[in-house]
Length: 209
Image (cartoon, rainbow, N blue to C red; front, top):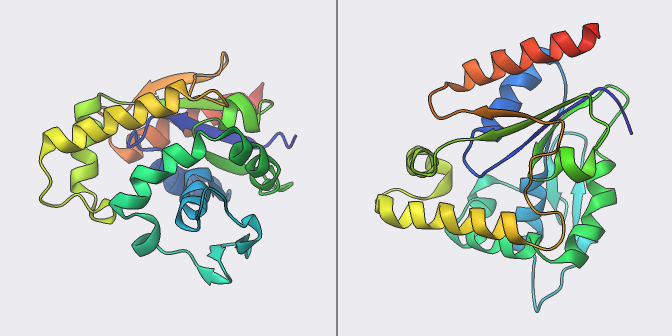
């Protein structure tokens, strides 16, 4: 395993994706958004199977059939609902594990997902587990234009958040768990920049050890 890796695991809408982008800029490390890869799998899922070779990476962008996988196709409510179900299938996770690990380079990586620290990169020197109150995460989803929640009732979005948590935490293969050496960070009252600053401080400390 490469050692220059920061893993960001945690619940949906806890701020992992936005934090990863800020950290990437601050630390000059590339980002692996594993959730986006599973969304791509869900997008091409047909008849309980998929052709994994249709998904590729050009060094910067995730591609489906050679074209950039955009938020317009990956962030629909339908894909958001299907993705955790697809991700819970053991065969899918087994097929995806070497693909996800291949994103790591000698330079390092910021890995955003559900099992980055617990399963994919167990030797990462800094593992974070981000969470937030469920209702806070529901409100974040409602305010995010890429999630297609405009006009949806808070109660409905909250129910979806809790259902996704249940699927993530109870799947048999690589469930969402906090790795024993992962640092828990509740982002409910923090801005993305504050979360990133905290992680950078921890990273600087780790680098000195």
